[in-house]
Every structure is written in structure tokens, then in C-alpha cells.
Length: 100
Image (cartoon, helix red, strand yellow):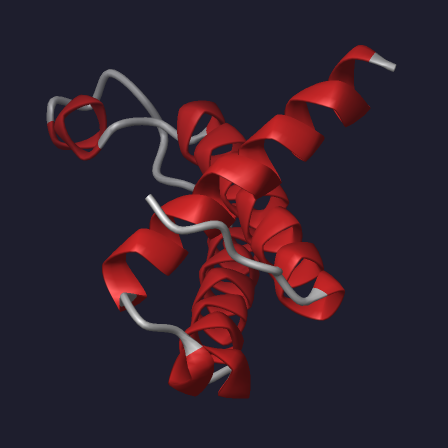
């Protein structure tokens, strides 16, 4: 696999995306399931929960678009390999940040 000199801003966008995905997941776990609401085993999500979920989804989308349209992609020989390198580098740095 080729080594890629990842732009710092792209790496930061990917890390922000990972954080936004975790936030979306946390919000999802805090909301009742649709099945539980239908079975009247839980109350529907509050307006505040729905707004928080929508904001987190919007943030994920915004970051995904910024990542996918970054001009650096036009300079790589293999988009697939470069995406893998970005995912790996961002995850590695993210893991280090969570430990430290």
C-alpha cells in the first residue's frame, strides 16, 4: 500500500466526523425504540431529543461532504487506498486522544 501525506485539515475533519458519529450513536441509544413506542412501552422521543438527533445527523452529513470534496483527493493515485489510510490515521490518533 502506498504511503500518503495526509493533509492535517482532512485528518481533523475525519476525527470530527468520528466524534459526530459517536454523538449520534449516543443520542440513538438514549431514545426509545420505535417498536417500544408502538407497543406503548415507552414515550415517543421528546422534541428536544428529535432536535438533537437532527442536529447530529446534519453535522455528520456536513463533515462527510467536506471530507469527500476535499481537493486532496484529486492528487492521489488510489482513492480507495487513500481513504483507508485516512481512516486508519484518524482512528489511530483518535484512540491515542481517548487514552491520554
